[in-house]
Length: 289
Image (tube, rainbow, N blue to C red; front, side, top):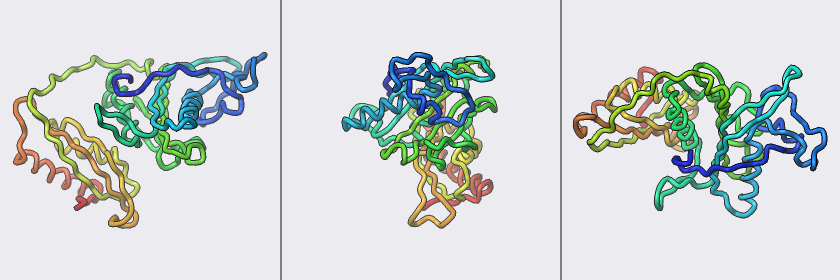
């Protein structure tokens, strides 16, 4: 996580009992201290989002709104008269995110989603996870920009934008249950030699129905191109002037590469045409001019 540009933090595990059910729809009984030193810290947290959001509020109140932090810690609960704890990974991002020397970008859903993808890939879960529109959205999250993190068909976390009623600025968070994740066995990790030849980047924007998921389009793009497409990343979703009602434009950054040569435009252009044809067939998509 540090190598991805986030700062590690260590927060209090004690919060106010009025905050313990925030940022989650899980069913549990809070673990309250019998003799707390302060009513502001009288209960053990269940989700770490509460703790990291307090850190964000502290910084925002001092005009520091560029916050990219993460923490690995524990959440506590009581169920069926038994006490339990879970190890979790939580991150919060807002403002501008530094992507390199003298280079920064406004944090959006796709940046924090990329952080999750890089983390899960590095742990050996590549191609075994997905982001699915959340069935139950905590009231503190934006209902249109929240997803469940699914690994091996099991919900292990949440990712999304906090609701404007909670944060006036755009604040994105994710939390993954590491205790449950690390119980899932990973296969042998396969390493692929980095190509010695330069990669080629192309951008493409497709207009699709509003209810089409960007992840599904990305899968179709990968399938259409095969091994010469090394990565596909959605970086912009637009609805408004110039886009038909009920439609949206999704822009993707495509990286093409080969192990034995530098690809030419003559090789890449047919692949771009194949992408448009495949997406037109699958989603009735149109290339945005």
